[in-house]
Amino acid sequence: MDTTKRENPQLAPARSQSGSNPHPHPHPLSLAVIVASNRPGRFAPVIVRWFLRHAQNRDDLDVSVVDLAELDLPSALGVAAPEGLAGVSATLAQADAFVVVTPEYNHSYPAALKSLIDWHYAQWHAKPVAFVSYGGVSGGLRAVEHLRQVFAELHATTVRDTVSFHNAHGDFDGEGRHKDPTACDAAAKALLDRLAWWAHALRNARSERPYAV
Image (tube, rainbow, N blue to C red; front, side, top):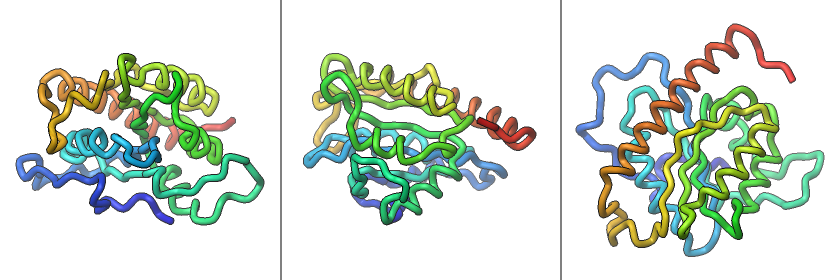
């Protein structure tokens, strides 16, 4: 199962015509947006659609979505990769950068996300990872702090700038629009600018000297 389809009606927003560029970037960065929640009735699509409006309107990014709700990853690791994981693995390998959109469950991140991370290894090496989190009073930041430790072990570089939504359900209206977008829109731009800087730097470094573990 390939979870990178951009036409996913639950997640993908329409592109803004004002954000289109007749002169696209000649060497766009490949960005994989990982949707960590697979819970029934999840709030993740609201957050993801909001974020994709920012990411997909940049001409320096080619955005794909990896939605864990479309995967059936076993919790027990084995030698052989699960059936249907090849498309996702290829997307992660091709990516120059990642954004993980995650809630916080019991002071940490979802088990499905840990399974996705653990089923892969070299795909994360020498690449930047940024985080968009949401939850209650903590805004998912405790999940992010745990993820920083995990990705460090996988030789990835986590970006300092984050976007976090505290008590997220109250931040958006019935149409999925943020009620007071000034601060979060600015935070999204800062995150993407910083992520793009690291992605360019690390892509150039990998091309000049392959990363060895």
